[in-house]
Image (cartoon, rainbow, N blue to C red; front, side):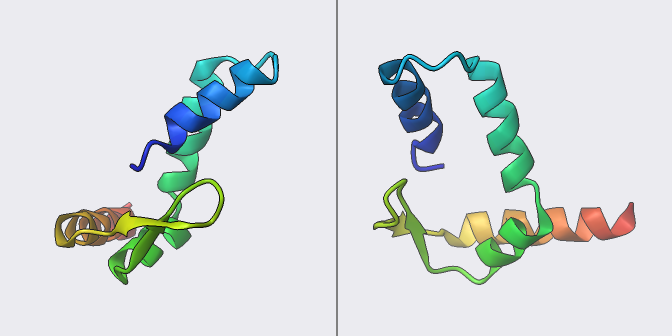
Length: 76
């Protein structure tokens, strides 16, 4: 990932919100496990930060892992 978890945790603390880190981690894990997200990864391209600005690119290794996860998802 591109540090979104850390940014979200810091923002929650800065705003004084009562959201446990574990909930942020669970939410992100749920999001990145979705078929839509995995399919987007397989296409490659840019990664984006919390403000929607390009920040790095999806690597071939990340694409391959996403493809493998989709294959495994299909077996269930």
